[in-house]
Length: 365
Image 1 (cartoon, rainbow, N blue to C red):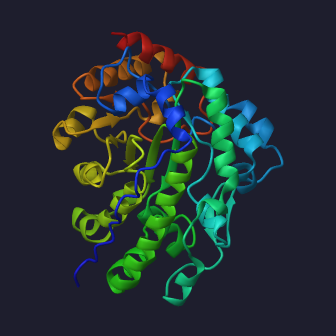
Image 2 (tube, rainbow, N blue to C red; image 1 turned 90 degrees about the vertical axis):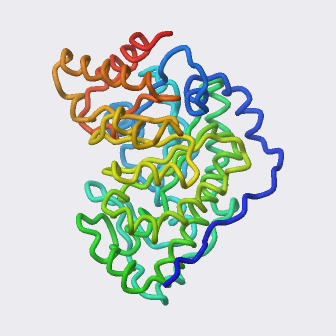
């Protein structure tokens, strides 16, 4: 069966409130590195930097469910700012979750502590697809409000908006929650390609619209998380996933917002993940930046890629690895230092602060 073309034309260029914010953050190291421009030092931020490793996060979240926390502008603002204040990172990452836009359009799901997103009625038939519809800005006015509050506080520090990629969202919806083997997802992908592509096309609209809401409100960079894409072969990614990720990222292609594309275990997919429309390709800790740069052919900036488990090691070996990654990143057309996945819950926040200071010191131009 021929793979349908689900790419969407970029929206017409318009003047949006986020333009003024992006002008204010254009000189920031994160934005400049993403655009492959010279920087005064290698910028650094951490995936999941706003979260469970911070005692102040645990205090403000006490007694408040995850989904509620993501929809309350007061909490979103405070939690997003916490690691910027504490660690001195070069960017804030918007506090949310990849399933927030799904909940916003009425999908019956919850984020269960210690488990992750759990979907009440998994999508495994065409009738189940009726749970989904297009996402509009009217579904998430709180997101616009939160981004506005944050950018007013952040000033020249950029805010990174994000969304889940169609494949990863589809996996949660088809499996009903987190999965180790993704058996239902792969069975649907191969067993009913027409339904699969219709599902992912709808999710591409939702992801793209969620990115656009954040960018129009003032996010200076966006990241598309394809957390589970590493379970796919190159052939399956090309035939069943690539066009939908392209459509999601195309939703902000007219806004002059650098786009980061990240997945876990995606060393074999790096070039493909850049080709869908990213300016920056995230590299997890399983692949060295040197190898990643060779696979990417110097066409993209890179982000990564310290193993988050090494934050539990003694300082001496951790320092050596941080310096090695900074050195590897010098060969890239642009490098944003990050972890190869998210901050683990039991990480010592003081270690993260020391890593930020070390990256800035070791990379100073």
